[in-house]
Structures are given as C-alpha cells and as structure tokens.
Image (cartoon, rainbow, N blue to C red; front, side, top):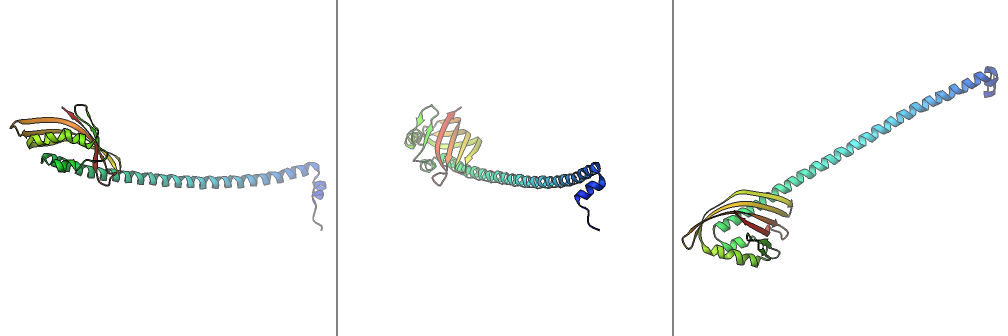
Length: 202
C-alpha cells in the first residue's frame, strides 16, 4: 500500500482535522524547542555563575595576598625604622655628635625648629644643634613615653615621639626638658636616613 502524502491526510481527515493536526505538530515542535531552549539557558546560566564565582574567588585571594604582603612590608619597615631610632637615641644619650649626625641625609635634609625657624639644610641643623651637645656634661635620663611609626611605603616612614630628658650641664646645673618631635625616614639612598625633622617643647 502506498504511503499517504500530506494531501492524502488533508482529504482523509478533512480540512478542520488537518488544521488541528498541523497545529498539534507545530505545538509539539514548539514545546520541544522551548524545553531545549530552557535547558540550554539553564546550562549557560550555571556555567556563567561558575565562571563569576571563580573570578570572585581569584580576586579575593589576590586581595588577601596583597593585604598579607602590605602587612609584611609595614612590619618590616617599622622594625627597621625603630631600630634606627633607638640607635639615634643611644648616640644622643652618649653625646656622640658624629654618630648622631650620621643618621641624617646630608643631600636632601630640611626641618623645623621648635622656635618656628626652618632648617634648610643639614648645615643649618648642625649650627642649631651642635652647641647643645657641647654644653651638656652628661645625659642623666632620656625616655620616650610615646613612639609611633607610620609606614608610607617600603621606602618611607614617619615617626612621631614624645621625650623626657634630664641632663647635667657643664656649668654644673641640672636641666630637665620635655617635648616631642616628628621624623621622616627615607630609604631611597639604600639605607634608612632622616630627611626631615620637626621639634616642639612642652
């Protein structure tokens, strides 16, 4: 028996039946397509979300690694600068001016005196500070109740401090002073040196 053609279906089923048949075929194909489309979209969404989550995890890990690195740099800088500051304080307590002044950058130094005048160079600073060393017979006590270091970057740090000092002058007089200071330490030259200081008296 020959296979029926589309026209045969049309005549066998009648016009109304044929239309409904075609509609059923279309709806079935549409439903199958819609189902396949939904599955495809769900797969795309899942893959996209997985990709975004991977990127977020990677970015978070990168941020954490950066935070750890910055914390390590900050800790290292603070340790090195504090060591330099302690050595500077020891030189001052020993009244060893040459050892004291070696912690200053001769090329780019500037600063602010407690009286409001500016030190434009290390020579200006020396003219102001050296006579004070020469006038002291002995440092009886030198304390720093507050020392705080702020890391700017791997080569720059700011140190602020408060100090209390008791001295015996060459004249035989005892003198007590207190105040504070700001120090800018730089490692641009390869070693930590003071590039600027400012002083204040209590």
